[in-house]
Length: 377
Ligand SMILES: *Cc1c(COP(=O)(O)O)cnc(C)c1O
Image 1 (cartoon, rainbow, N blue to C red):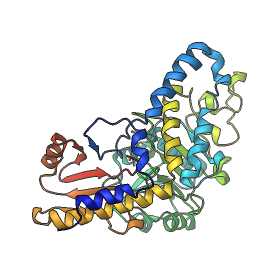
Image 2 (cartoon, rainbow, N blue to C red; image 1 turned 90 degrees about the horizontal axis):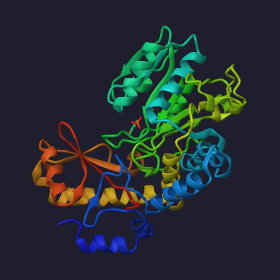
Image 3 (cartoon, rainbow, N blue to C red; image 1 turned 45 degrees about the vertical axis):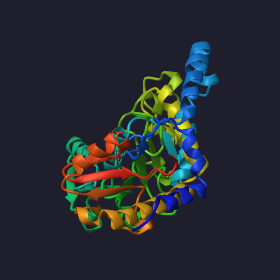
């Protein structure tokens, strides 16, 4: 018969993260299992944005760039994300979209290593990563793109690879890759390794330092609950910061933006990866989202997501066995992210029928039904 509703209620009652649900605005009667596509709004975000608009912007006007800490926001919020990804505060900065950050870091590594001309990526990685790898390879002088089969990145590492790009948690299968082993393999062949943390930040523990990681990017509007189109973040290990230059050499990455000098001179540290004026409304919402995740902690979130997965898998095994429905991806907790994907020939209709009953997941054509097991709500 499998798990019962009473068992689910008992688990809820003993759940140390249970109170977090009240800190999100969600429609009544809705079970939202799509926080890995768009996290819901934390209730404090509305208040935060209201204050920024009426107080900081409305009253403080242009003085708020300094007085309200606007100019410092990309570094300040980067420092708040840093512990969630196992980095130091001065190695993470917030700004632009994940797509733009992918471009900046890929292009920077090609420019820094004229003797290495290949960008390496896996065939089934997230589409924007693939598109940008292709775009950068077409844009940087003599650069090429190499596409490895799914799971095969390491076999293609070699003396011509400038940079290899990989999602830490796969957006469909939820497979979590071995960051330490793959980073080591890239380092051994002299290539940079760029991790896309979009589906792992705020869902599982990440230890960039422990893995000896070089570079990473990540999304603000998924498990970090930063709001639609929230600014993304990037990580550059301290040892690489002086050597890599931002190809989008905008004034916010200048060593002294307000000197209005005609010559570009990059800022010393991670700030050189900024481009233009930071979007303060979006950053304010992101900061509120990041604070909630930090308060809960990545370890507690990961542990609960693993139990949610076990519960769901047990339900599926006991009740859905007759429906030709399979959970794809690994089942071991340490090899999974915080979402689950089911394969069924009629997955699109399944997702539509669930939505009519107030359960929101998403459909990944042709046959995948994907559900975010977001422990905070
Ligand atoms: C969501 C996601 C992105 C998003 O990129 P945007 O520039 O914000 O649209 C990038 N990569 C991965 C792996 C993602 O999951």
